[in-house]
Image (cartoon, rainbow, N blue to C red; front, side):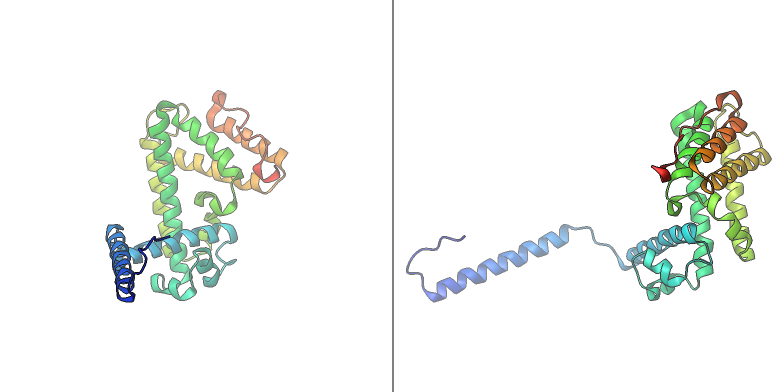
Length: 238
């Protein structure tokens, strides 16, 4: 609350109000200048990424045939009109969401290699058979949720998936020496198939049987290092 001197004239009072407004406007403009400015091109890139992230969640949760453009746009909190500014079709968004999901898997492998060194492979296997088995389907791994959808899709999507799968397998082979880690592309693909297949089966049955599947797959991939999976109770049933 402002304390004004008594017997102030109306002109002086107007001057005070005017100066206050000028100062407030100045401060507001100064604050805006200090905020990082985002160019229109940057906004476009951010919006496109937002749609792509939402599309990935939507496809993983509902499949290609289970969600339309309106649903994909809703996942991103945008309109279908905004969707078509960035993608010319649902198939286009599907293809790119597959590529992004597989790139995230590749990044995950690299993260485990960097963080765990020689023990990266057992740590990765246990993580995949626990966290990626029990998380919400919308946040699941593209390797586990998308292959059947890709197989029914167009040639472009299959080529995109194949290239991304080869990239993931190569990162596994090129990683640090680790107990029971695959040593060639074929072995890496076989291991990835085991992980994805185990998670798919485990998601389709009750928690006790799911735990058995995870533990058996861990033992098959890690030998004597394997055993009872870290996730002994599915988070879906907690």
